[in-house]
Length: 634
Image 1 (tube, helix red, strand yellow):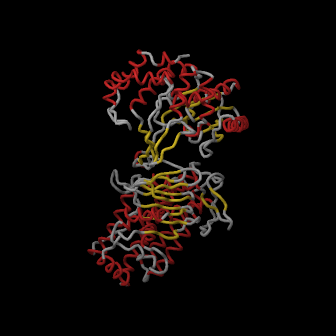
Image 2: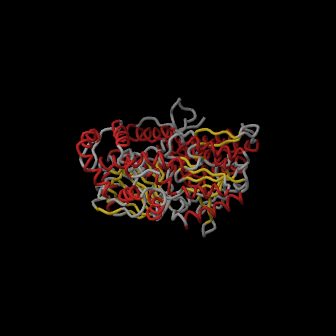
Image 3: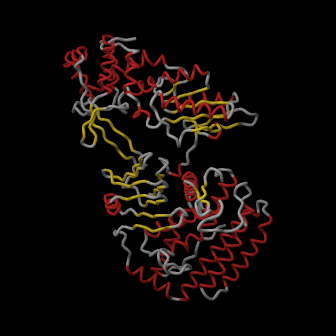
């Protein structure tokens, strides 16, 4: 192993300086620029080297701060003195030469020539040899959780004492965060060039134990995979390794990303495994949907495209610098203010006064929903003012019986048409029992066309929906999703739970679109303006429930993407609800559907765009008297 003289050799210095000549120019917290390092080092290297040899060298304070990306993901930035970075580079070059060769072949990450694809292909090879069950362990906050005392002991048993002492002063240096200076007592500093090698070294003993056990394993930094032939064997391995990581290595697991799974159902470091005809196991890079614009998926806050965030867990919403911070006992997530229009809250979330002021200033709305998926209430900043002339014209339309009936009839005929077309879609695919349901909806459409008042229209709509929903038992054929009749508050089965939740999501999408106009969502057409919070969004949603919400339900159930035993929960009242994982899955598929090409429209026109145009066209009807024809699906 190397000593302090080899670490500080002229050759090692030249290699380190050469690496800095290739770096982008910038200043460290000491004010020295990377481009100035060459001249500075040639003038001052004797003093720095003397301090290192004497053991008196002390790194400068590291200034740490966080940046929020447009996706909301928080990235920690460590601004380190340029001279300290150079000394760290001297250490890192020697760790790479002497320590990395010690690491086992099945340990990947932060090593030359050992990338993600190599690691994923190793798991593919295990699966190809019949080890179809995966014990997956994801270490929670790995770099920040490393026990420095234990790491120091490992270093003392491996490296020269002077080298160990130098590394130790870097491990326990002072950092400044939010104006407070503190000394590092646990964890490795992310941004330090020596941290990756030390992180691998910390778990090297764990890797050796896996090898001695004869396990089929792979580790990529804090992601550990062990393949087994049976589920029981994988479960036993999971328990053993979880306890060993906690008791021996002082590391906790991220429980939401750790467990025992079928290997072909898991994504391995961004790669999908699949079984080809003949039994061969293939591996390919996972393809992410670009239209989803979902740059960051988190377990508590899910960023959606078009400026809407969904919070599906309990927690607290605070202001953090110039953004919002949602946090609970498990994790924290940052929400960028500049690209957010609305928060949809599905859990018990406390909003601090500072956060409320930030929301008001940025014009961000909040929609609160209860456990049944029903809208509890909304927060709309005062800045969302409405044009008085549009409001008065909208009231005039509602109070004119003839105009309201004409418009309500248009809405209802389009809604019944879309339900009927949905049934016809599946009728053409062999569900012959739907023929009678289609005929019944045709009769309802004829009656609606001859109806003389809005109340009668509502009764016809209720009969049409009842018959339409009866067709679900024919369309959804998978076990666990039997559908007898429509039930609400609470839904009595998984299918009804998805209908209720999906309808609420659609209501909120339209509510968000209406808030962008001068229309008042409280004044509907078909749905009466009474004590309910909003009505107009319900009218629009009825047009798109069959082609958006219901098609998502059919797809999730019939393709086995959602499971009745894994994505739902039974509540005290005896009802069935989507759990947090189920909600995230459903929201994900809803967003994909909204961004998919709308049937009957031009290429590149999504359902979301069609829905926004529906609202805009209705506003033109209210304001200018232009003809509005509600959307019909073909």
